[in-house]
Image 1: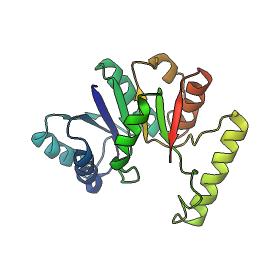
Image 2 (image 1 turned 45 degrees about the vertical axis):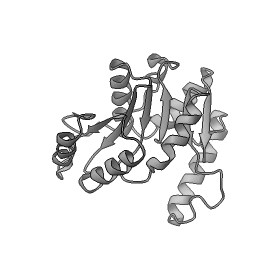
Image 3 (image 1 turned 120 degrees about the vertical axis):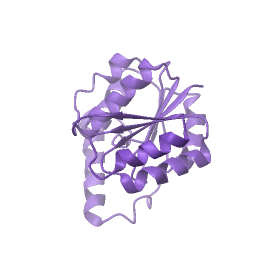
Image 4 (image 1 turned 180 degrees about the horizontal axis):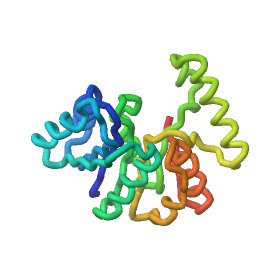
Length: 199
């Protein structure tokens, strides 16, 4: 399966080499796209060093920061344009561990979208600061209650089966910021796409 791993970046100089190395530890074949929103800290130069050694790594740049949701939309559109079968999205900051990719790719065989859930286990986020935990739990409860969906919708670590999903449905998510993540899952669920979660 032709697979793309899409990673938005903004001032991630210290992290791009780390996330790249972790990905290649588990996956040596997939293409990787770094999508940068005009980093000023040398992130782009670090990505170019990686590209010089790995011809399956690519870089797309924008002139300024236009929102994390917008970056994901551009990655999704790129993956459709290049006719990838599978798209994996993850953050560059190390919060999304590539070791879970193999499990997610197994799950995508019987689904259309695979997402991660931080609430399967009570102690999943026990090490987080209290204020972050409070915000996360409150947001999770409100989104699920107000939208009548039962997913952890705010995560960016996802796998999309592009041959089953229509681009027009993903682009119905209008928000360009963080809201894109729960808006897109709401739209996909209401359009009867099969969504599976892993812890």
